[in-house]
Structures are given as structure tokens and as C-alpha cells.
Image (cartoon, rainbow, N blue to C red; front, side, top):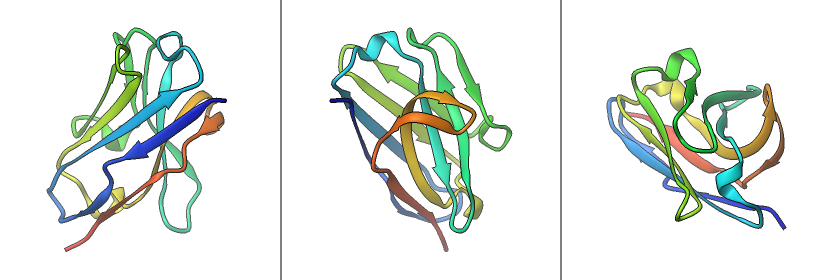
Length: 118
């Protein structure tokens, strides 16, 4: 069974930082591109960042560029998202996922809540 478990969310002030983690199991983690997607309150899913199976290629949604960094540790089957300079509009539930076409992903975790508020 494919399992993705996110952690690291929380409440942070604007300008603050958080590091999200996603522990993966049930598949060969090192063979798959991985994704972070998010859902803001009352909005649809938005793809935030992608990383290649080997970790050498990354893509970011425009609002995440320069502030977020996606990375992975294939030895630990873990995906990360370092988020700096957080803004109010970054509030939402963040999911790690595999096999995404747009925001349609075959598997997502349960999500971790990120709330940016003063």
C-alpha cells in the first residue's frame, strides 16, 4: 500500500518559516517524481513544487519561486518543503503526492495544515 504522511505544518507569522516533511512507504520512492500541492481555504488544489526522482530537477509555481525549496532524501524515503518568507496567502493544507498530471494526482497524503497569521 502506498502511504504518504506529511508533517511539520503549524501556525506561523508572516515572514516566518516552516519545513514540511513527507515520509513515503509502499513504493520505490527513488523511482518517482514527487510533488507538493496545496489547497487554500475555499479554493482548489494548486501545485506548488515538483522534484525529479534523483532530486536534480525542480519546478516551482510562480508564487513559490525564491521562497520555497523542495528537496528529498532517497535514503530516508522522505520529501521536504522548506518554506521561507511565508505570506498570508500561503495558508492552506499542504499535501505530498505522486504521479500528478496538473493537480490530478494518483496518491496524496492526508495533508498538513499551514496557517500564516499575525
